[in-house]
Length: 155
Image (cartoon, rainbow, N blue to C red; front, side, top):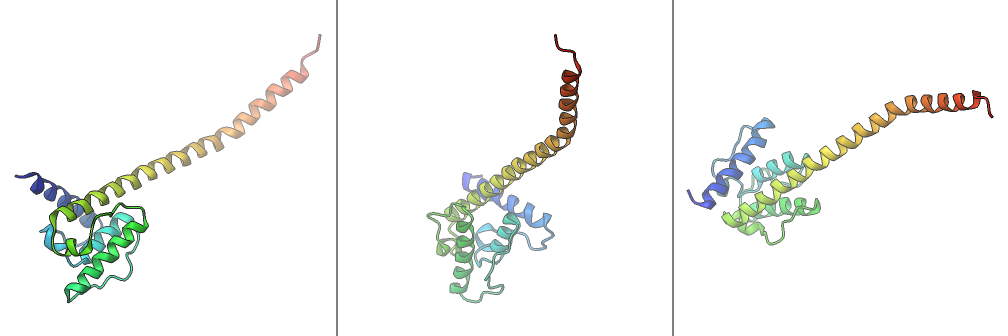
């Protein structure tokens, strides 16, 4: 198995994991062919970004409609800070494996960053909850200490 075959297999499995998890019936069999029209690519992006990719032609008939779909996907990703520099819709439409692997690498990094961001926000929420729950107890302790200090006789 070559490195490209290995990477293709990894990204195919990665994409299929998210497609299956979201209940999609259509999975990727051939990464180069199955995302060429942009329809399945848009589905994968929607699952990863948790946001709808607008203006996708669900049944593209011509090569230009397919390229337009892929271009919409690339623009969608670029608008969300995903590095798609050097990727062209034509190359992806034409099954250029290097371009497709580059796109899926960027998609997987985006998903990873989303996951880390989600964990960060979750830890902030938990910290906020701890501080909120601790504050009444802390205030009660401070008030008691202040009361104790005031009730002590001064020398």
